[in-house]
Structures are given as C-alpha cells and as structure tokens.
Length: 551
RNA sequence: GUGCCCGUAGCUCAAUGGAUAGAGCAUCAGCCUUCUAAGCUGAGGGUUACUGGUUCGAGUCCAGUCGGGCAUACCA
Image (cartoon, rainbow, N blue to C red):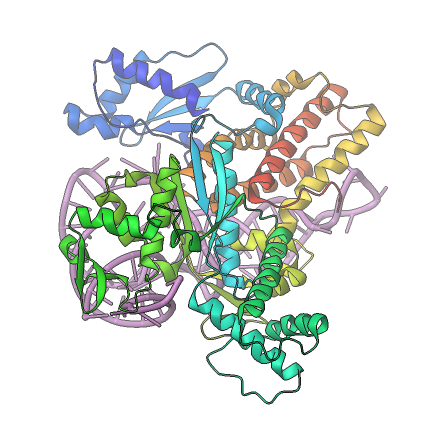
C-alpha cells in the first residue's frame, strides 16, 4: 500500500518545486482517527523550506491526486501530519491480490540476482547442541528465509573446526572412557569432556572392536569416531527444528594449501603485511590493531606457531568475499561480540567493501522452570541440551519461543508455558487461527461447494464491517513487515505481526457469521478467510513452524 | 577499569525520532441449544531506572549516574 501512496507524494513535492534528499516516510497511525496512513513529510521539510508545516501540508495536498474510489479523503492534523483515509472497497480490492499472489505474497525482487550467505550455528563437533546454540540457529534460519523472500539466492553455511586442540581433547576423552570399558584403571582428567555422550561413543567403539584398540597410542580413531557421531547428532537435532545447511565449511581447509600455493591463513598474513599491519614481537605474530586506535594488538599466530582463532576467521571471511557474495550475514551469540570488529577491520584494510557484512548478535537465553530462572552457560557446564528441549516442548514451540523476543533482549524461555496446550501459549494461538480457517473452508466446500481458487473474490469489496476492514487492512501490511524484518534482521517483527493477524481473525470470526450469512456475503467472508490463511501460511513458512489444518 | 547489549504495567515483552507509550500472562467482571470457548468483550494497572542536553516533537538520539548481562586470553 506504501507503493500506492508514495508516487503521489513525490509527485506533489515536484509540483511544489521541492527538492530534497529526505526519505518520504509513510506510517500507520496508532489511532484510526489519524487516518489509515500518514506522512510527516511536511514536518520534516518545514525547516529546510523555511515554511510553516501546516501551510506546506496544505500545498502538498493540493498537488495530490488519486483515482476515484481509492483515497476517500486527506487531512492535515496536529502540527502538520498529512493523513490519508482509504475507501473500504479499495482496501478489500487490494486484498484480492493476496489470493492471486498466493505463496508469493510478500516476496519482492529487491534481492533478485544477488547472492547472500548466512552463517549460523557453527558449533564445533565436540558435543551435542545446547539450548544456547538453538536461539542463534533459529534466528539465522529465519533470516535466511527472510532474505529468500526478497529474491536473494541464499547459501546457509555452517563453519566448523575438527582440527583444533578441543577436538584432540575430545578424542582423548573417548579414549579414556574406552579404556574404562576395557577394564583398565584410568583417572579421567577434569579438563576433559565430562558428558555422558562420551561414554556412549566409547561404547560404540567397544562393541565394534572389543579391546583391540586398547594398546593403540593413536588418538585418531577415537577422535574421528567421536566427530562422526557427534556431527550426526548435531545435524539430526537441527533437522528436527527444520534447520538444514547448504554448506559446511571446515576451518581446517584454511590451514592447508595445494602445491605451489600458500594457505588461506598465510595469504591473509601476507596481504596484511603488505599493508603494514603485521608486527612480530614476543615470539608471536600480531595484527597491529593499535594503529587503528585500539588499545592492544591482537595475536594472529601464537608463539607456538599455531594461528589463533582470529586469523582463520579473517581468512574465512576473505573467502566469503572471494566467493562473491553480495551480502554476508553472520549470526552469533553475545559472547562473540568482540570478535567481529577485528575481522571487519582486516577486510577493510584489504580493500573489501565491508558494508556487505551484517552481523546479527543474539543475547543469551535464560530458562524458566517452575518460576525459577536458570542461566545457560556452556562453560559452567549447566547448559541443557537442545534435543531435550525439543522433546519437551516440540519443534514449533522451540522455534517460535527463540524468536518471539527481539534478538537484543535477554530471552526468558518459560518451559511450562511452551508446553501448555492452551491459548496462553503463543504457538497455539497462531496455529489455532490457521486450523480454524482450514476447518471452516472444509465445511464450506462440503456444504456450499466453495472453492478457494474459484470465482467471487471481487465480492469482498462489499464488506464494510469494522472487523472485516481491520482484518483486510492488516493483511496488506505483510510485505512491509517482511521488508522491515529484513532491514533489521529481526524475525521477531513477523511473530508480533502474525499475532495481530490471528487476533483480528478471531475477532472477525466471533463477530461475523460466515457460513450462515447471505450467499454473497458468505462468499466474500470465505475469501477474506482464504487471504488470511495465505498470510498466516507464508508467515509460518518464514518462521519455520508448521501450519496445522486441524487441531 | 574499558567496550557492547539491556533497564518500559505485578510478570514476559512491543513501540523505522511522531499524535493519548501498547500486547500477552496474571487479577477482576461478562459472552457457548449458534461455523472449533485452543476463542471473544470489558475493567483496573505507568514519573518508560535517574539527571541534564539536542528539536516542531525523545521510551527512542547525545552526555553523565545507578542497576543487570556479556566480553575484555598467545581459548573458539
């Protein structure tokens, strides 16, 4: 609907000989008294034009013209807002487009021909996924879905490392447990992975090889088996909540090089060295971030000769640029917040357009169990498993709860609430609206032969009750909600919006008889229901939750 | 100490610098012989942590204070 008003406003500005680089803003006033849509353009330009905002608004209105039957009236209000009131029939006429566009409603082509990479989850295969990872996982997945609707060709990538010290320790941990199974006396070190899953892996090896591996001093079989099993479990867990990556990028590949070539890590060092941002002292190789106004330099290669995590990180992002992505989105938790500025700085120094990088950081999750809050921390070892959460509350609730608060807010996950099969639970509230429509349409098909793809959607233009108009009007917001979710990398906007749509549908359903109405009104209301179902479905698709046809 | 995020109704959270700060839960009062009551209607509930500043306009931006979280490794 913004697209409908915008050209007229620009036209009016031209007619008034106003040139401005200010963006015209159209918003939906909270109060209906202030119109269906409103623009503050006169207020914004008031100073620049040295004119009274109300006078300016009057002139602009004089220059605006709309086709018959679209805009009912325009008003100047308050300090100089221009408020637009639409014809109800025009609103409902626009709703018809939703049905016509179907699954494509809400998509746009702003990203057409562009590629995007979204990196998320990226947990090393040292153990099963924890709840803390879940939030970033779902956030990243929804962001990828959002970008897809805008026409981007999206690569969903998982970055991991199976070569570091942590993986060595993992292998050793399995080996200790295995030796226990063989009946050897071992003291399991505190520094190693304590989880039960280590024993399970050891058991797999013991079942297969009995004690044949006991004398082996080679850690490889333990590490490799652990990695395979754990990665499998991670992917299975992700699959349960509809997360599937297109590409798994192994950090280790950045350390190695083909013949006559240097490794990606080494290339970064060389390139930064050319720009004179590399220093060598205290036995280590440093990224001279102090030259950029930071307090300290950052280690890229430790005195042991091993790269610190920062170097492969930069190399990895350099690789993303080399792969030519137009948009690079990184999703990670607040504990990595200090990591990305160095990466961005390095790439900027190397001459890349770092404006392409967007970082979505999610704050941590605290679980509420029976009113008690439990903070999640992988390091303290009290993190619960994502799998157990999914067992407990289901995939849909898991996904929705992770994104129903903005990513910047510290999420409070109320397990009891997520488990409830009642209206208190927002998952059920949303899904119930969809199921209710499906049920209604089934009945309509049976009783009066109604077909959602049939004719008669134009009859919606006759609808004029408050509940009908409000619902139809809300459905038209959907594309704008997607746009703003994309702009802010914030699926939470979608959740809130869909909740509003569900609420308005329930009100409509409550107040307006559908099957029992006169045939023409009945058809009109059924089509309004079809349009609502379409918006809910499309929205659920982005959030990755199911759209049940009955409950 | 320094950097980043947060502080809004009893609780969980919304509000691209816009008009009288909104939802849900909880509380209280109503609505089913009627298409799913897994729903709807209504009521109460606020000095937006505090103090200044910027401007037509600040919950939002800036500075400071207080409180909570996360970082601040030659861990990832």
